[in-house]
View 1 (cartoon, helix red, strand yellow):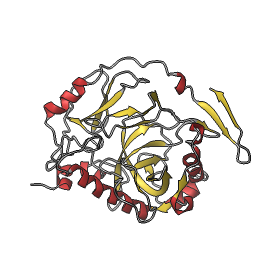
View 2 (view 1 turned 30 degrees about the vertical axis):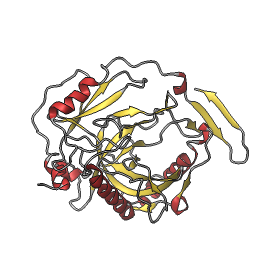
View 3 (view 1 turned 90 degrees about the vertical axis):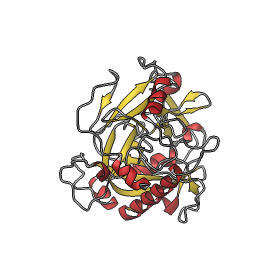
View 4 (view 1 turned 180 degrees about the vertical axis):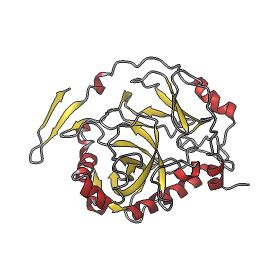
Length: 339
């Protein structure tokens, strides 16, 4: 029997042949296609994923963590440089809180819902929406049963988050290859919530950015803005400011890669469990040979067929008309104006 790592490698070698579109709404990428279902700006909206040969896949479990596992052709690629796949959930400057649905079959991307309402992040002055392309590294998992020896907190039960700091605005569901530069340890409501800082390898600055110190030099103020954003983004919802491990200092690339490797090991254990319990993460996948949750093509297609039909986007609801949140350090006065 092949190991999970071997399975992820073998099953990620996608066909190079052109494939027909299964839906007029499919968006093709180098190795993946996305297929929207439901209507944007509604609770039933989902973005599903297919491999280049049309197989329905999970972006959480079937997309390899390491870009080398899918033989990506990359210009200016240094042979010893580790590159990772990133699944973009939220494009830069947007406000809808989109995320991989870890507890749904095939883990499509959906908009988060809280108390029956779609979630949006406020514009916290001087920022507009998310200030990076925000997403996750596939095949990683922050184990809620594991207490990190540095942060002294458990994992947040999600794939590890990524802030991609390049100049291009990506699309929800886009899979890009990134170079890791460092990491920030956010403590979110008592849970460890690592934030990887990375750069799209197609970005003009990618060759110049190789460390967290390079970010300070080439993109001055960007790291400080990142800490400020994560510290205050929940304040408009009436919650206290977030806190950080390491006094809010960024750890370097080597530290970040070790954290990523650890979350990859946790993920391997997750997909190899014998069974799931109750509200746990759904590990259904199409490619992991040894995983008990591997499904057939027919079973995967049935998931998409059961989803809502694609329709035109709905108008953005009132909660989506984001407030401009002005935060003053020396007062408790919040000024909000609709944009």
